[in-house]
Image (cartoon, rainbow, N blue to C red; front, side, top):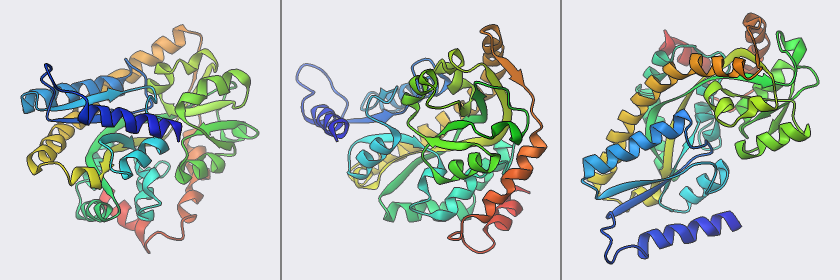
Length: 325
């Protein structure tokens, strides 16, 4: 609550306290994320902010808040739903409470092709879901962000699911990833990304799953020295805000944010493809052992996850598989 109050006061100051001699932008939107300055995600957000400033002639601005400055993901999503001028990244796994079907796009080994996954985000099926989210208070700004491929960094080698037994692995607090890590044999331990480094240090957790860029950017390889390239999720992401706030914006500003957001999404795909190999080499130089596990075994044990969501629409898995083809 303190974080939310602080963020609310910050937003109020931005909307009412700026001006005077300074030519403040007519519209200023906070962009909050857990990742640290210098990480690929932060680089993409700076690209987006620059693009917005350029296209709007300085009348619209994105103000960036990395490193969980406005709170954990759940805090920021609540701020957005309350009508604050904030946008945040939220994987579709976090939207299952609003539309259970969307969770399938975060399923294990659904596809290793970002191009095929992004085609689904352009399909009538998804566009209908996106429109329905507005009625529930959520405005999706961009849907083509590539966060990366998620692997596991742990304090011991992981080559097969048997090696996961007894391990506590940090996951984001969404049911799809919790069930996936549990299907692999580990104990899923949800916590905000900002809490992971001390949790590794104290032994509260034994490992963490995330794309290489995030693992490296948060310096988690300093505490866990085995990177297992399980590649269980090609992580497509969306960026969203509250529909209550977006309704207050002029239509041309909404269009500007969405069109520049799409360009930022394309840039994220380029950055993601360039970064992993370079960062893995840096992790190796820092003493990390990189493991090529038996991925087929991980695929086999996680198939059960797709049977554990009774609220999904009938035939949903087959529908998505057809779209992927």
